Length: 143
Image (cartoon, rainbow, N blue to C red; front, side, top):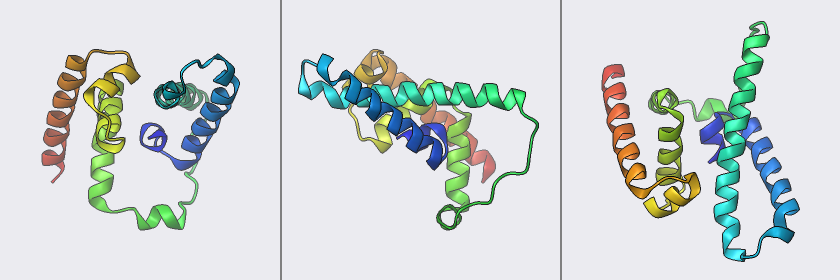
């Protein structure tokens, strides 16, 4: 989930590591064991948002440089249709991306997504519907 939200493996690993460190610190305050998974999901989303904000601020300050060499693993996964879909997803607004990631990559119900993001289930449904329509329009243009 973190990789889909931040866009690269290394940042995603940093996000998840920070979240688990936070969970370790928060364990004494958690009163319900079943609340750990929703806590982790929300924490990953929040930490991913922070990572993206930091990345945006850093990009404004840094001089552009040549991109780093791609790993063999990423080169294998580098299919044209996957690139097109990921590019289209990146163009979506933040909340739309989050709803789609939670729904289609985490297989969460609308109720769980709403609880994780702190929005209503109706907002989840309408956001997902608009996001899918936007993806369909974007991908039809690229094909």
